[in-house]
Length: 146
Image (tube, rainbow, N blue to C red; front, side):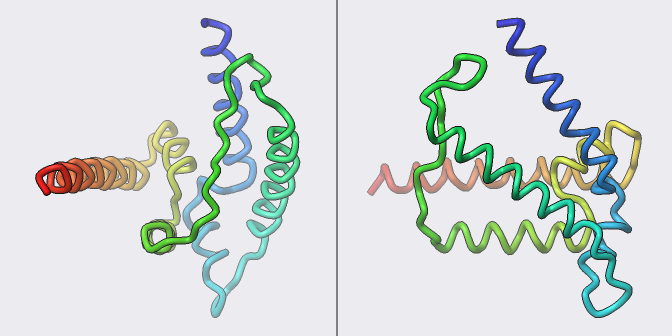
């Protein structure tokens, strides 16, 4: 089990370093990318394109496997349905990204670097996650009561 934790740590470290090198931890760079009508910075489009290519290859390989490289079971998403929750979640994610210049991964990396704006973002992220969990529990409770 310790090998799994070490692998997870090293993969997370590699991901974090990639975010730093790509400039994803710099909100001004992200906001420059999102500013299509102003001083648009297209460099993050190349980062996203590269990530999509790597992701396509990784998912193609993963679909052919029943076990992960570390021996765990593969848990790939099976739903292809675009529903209201997915659209609303995407809109909220995009709005948060556009307002703050952070998405969750880069915010956590920036938090580790001592960025106070990232700290505020991560606290808001955690609060939003907690509110979602509370709402889901209430919804489940109400459905159970009939």
